[in-house]
Length: 113
Image (cartoon, helix red, strand yellow):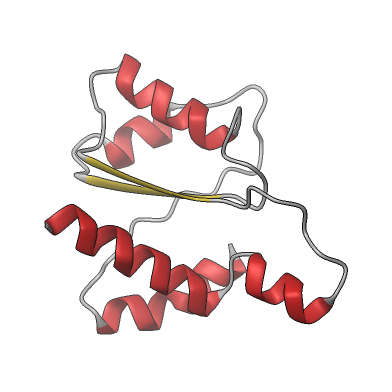
């Protein structure tokens, strides 16, 4: 969450105005805020430190589809490999301010083309 918050100024500079929803309790999963906030969203970006396979982002997409609210474009930012022990390599691999903005920008550019 801190990385997303720290990237807001860069996103707003590019006229990207995200709605942020951060779950602190995954079970039981309360889908009401998700469905209310993202019901009319064209683009959904999910972020997690782990793999996107069998993840909370998978469940979020499933909930939206089951409720006839699938996003037009989905950008799933995740880490599909082992996090290195080296701090320098970890910073490059795990979501941070710079690579978050770059991945969101790329995903949006792909969505618009």
